[in-house]
Image 1 (spheres, rainbow, N blue to C red):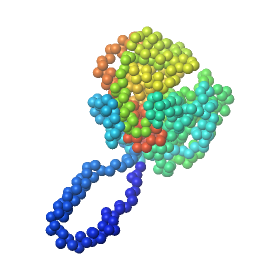
Image 2: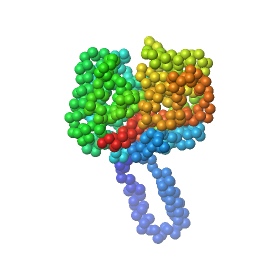
Image 3: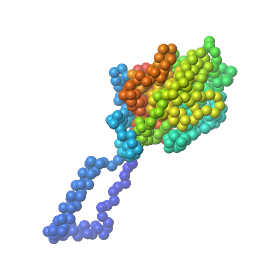
Image 4: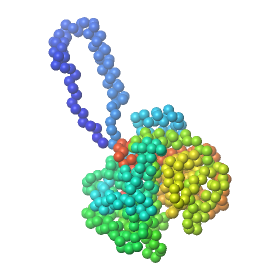
Length: 508
């Protein structure tokens, strides 16, 4: 973060040259009248001045300090969301050359086209050094962290999962699991420039509990006391810390990679395997980042993007991907990736989407089901989306779905049928004017029976503008590689920290 101290410059002459310098300095009266020497002196002065000008106009490149500017990122625009300034805009985005040459040029320029967030005193994050049983220790039994899936391949690389070179560089593209955001978030904050090791200077206190991984490993635990044991231990530990008492935990936060429903077991309803983490009074004092907040009971919950597959380490990679998205040829008007669901309302919406897409010659259907499926292959998912103008986003097992963020990454305009799939969830990350980047067709409306017809009504100019807005959103919805330094753009973690800092100032 700081410029490396340079060693003292070497003398401009050797020992032999010192003698020459002494000779000339003592005989300057004799030699200055020599026309050759006068000419040489003039050339030397000219070159020196030219070098000085070059250094002034083109200073040596230094390593910038990437920080998070809360004041900058929190200014709302016409009642837009507090992070609207963090929606990264390229220079003249509508005029960017999308040729291969332009992509190469974008990756070789030395200055980031994005607004780089900076850290001010109001954003200083302290990471609690929790006992290993609350996070990394859970990974020792990675094969049982999910009752349906062996999570060992997915927790690799600090949660990024296995490299996926079919998508691009193996250093930036991974088969990332949809419920792993808590691990990636932890890894990013540990290496974040806004992190402080001094809790006395902290304005935010991060409790890095891998709650989602713990919850999914206990879905079938019948003993409710045993199911809740680790979450109760966590709260006891945090409440015993001196920094909790400063604001009774209101400056503390937690990030969870699963939906809020998995941590809010209802006392009088059916048991779906959830624990009671978010029902605990102490946790209600904290801010909770989760990939899906409870729409009606989540006043302290804030939506966090699902992780997709792209985790760049530099802004050049981001610009190159944005330009690639702009030049994708989209042969299909719309597409749907998903399978049928149980339950009256979910089944009705999905079955209708599947029916309409299957009957249309303008729709690409990638139907999911049990067993082996292309739906779980990242390259197949992004291929369908990158070839489509619009992507239907029916609610999944809950309101939200990772597919929403895959579609943004691919530049495919999402079509929502419920406001709780995105609009009420990710207010820190998405524009307040939802029509600038998405289409809303209410699931029980007449329009929902003729989706193709409704999409064809949208003018091509509007479609182009909506896609450009999606492309602008890609950086702030992306989780950068945890090892990245000096990104040159703000990612999802940057947006979350800036928004948290602003929010906590209102509650303490």
